[in-house]
Length: 348
Length: 263
Image 1 (cartoon, chains in turn blue, green):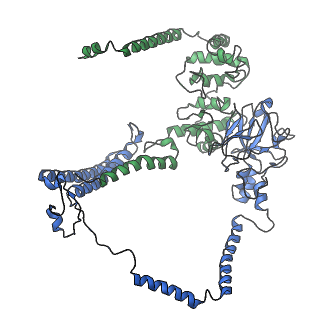
Image 2: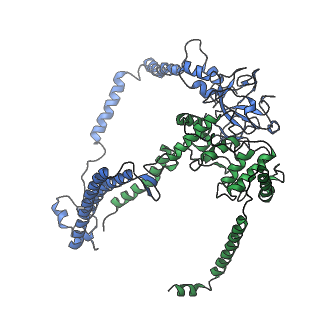
């Protein structure tokens, strides 16, 4: 490896290329000086291309030969489909070797001298700049933009007001025929009201307190959820009304959001996190903590649903519950505060 | 060759420590063999089973759960937890605990099946609780897997993840993966609520619903992973992370190779 000052000792192929050679020192490669090394590089490149061909043929053979259902054990990967692994490996290797061979060819055998590429100046000539500036000032003068201030100001006013109709139309993003509730009312109310039966989510069966031993967790919904959902053709009602019921020993409840809102140790809380509205039912029955998997907000259901950890800023809303004359669990009122994440018009 | 190797190293200070460790392991293993070699009294009658269970309980459990199972500062009460709870905790090796900690970890069971049965019979005799599920209750052959999937996502997925791979809880606790769980363990866990897990009683989640959930979990367990490296079956997020770290690093390596000037 000899360092030679350019352009005295350039390789022959660089000079014959006709490109202007840069005036910086050029380092010759082994393949430029040693014909043996050049032949070795040639063999390497050809070997990669031949291997690529072989892997391509192997792919076709494997495609027909391997049973698509066959399963093999491969360390790290585990139990995998034999066909998937072999087809992926042969095709990937085949195309990788074409690229690797091409790069090896370019690096070892193609000329690598530094050359100069001629380019134009980036800046426009002074005459053109002056002409553009003159055009601008003549336009300003001839339009009278500076001379008629009332035109200028009204134009600015018109353009500033134009986006307002577009913004007003955003109001139609929620379904709001005249006389329907405002977004604030929609977000602040749920299907729960006095006497609404609590049913299991998914199977929609009414719940008896006797069926809930201490430590039980039930994901629940209002009894008329499915009717409303079918009538409205959306899941908004479900998103707001989802609750969880948990039962603890009555003396474990340290605080509630209202006096006697539990029924013999059964408490009902919204299932929707007050941070950004993830549904949560990660209830640990020994600590009475309710953990949101999205951002780790943690609520203490034995202590009025207050936040004990995480980014949530408000406690989990509680639903007052009791039993009806048939002995099934019912809500005794709607939620006293809006469920789910905070919103613009929310009071307090 | 080998003799030389040993001879040259026999005065090393490490040898003493190694011999001591071997001796301790030998004594421990010997004791374990001797103590477990005592055959459990063949428990035919329920009463003998309860008595045997009480003996085992006083020996192995009472230091935490107190003499009569009423519980203490370090172990919850066992009155009313039922045979299903004991069977789950002891047969999966979660109890007795290897060491106090956030999580009772499943490990090789310490008690034989007969001893576990005796313990379960004793704890069940303290107060009524969920019984060990019968073969009929565990028969999920006719259960609806799709229905089980819906119920699993409503009731179980929040902790055990939608594909049953498990997930984190608070303060170092976690919901374990369900990939190795048997139908009996799944059923017992639902009715008894082990550790942090709440109870899903037969009243609010009837037997048919539990069978559907078991059928769904068994289906998840048997689901093949033809591509390998399922990455917890977390889907595009985990796969994207894998691409952005492992595969991106490989691509960077290739880019560096392309850029290095040949010598």
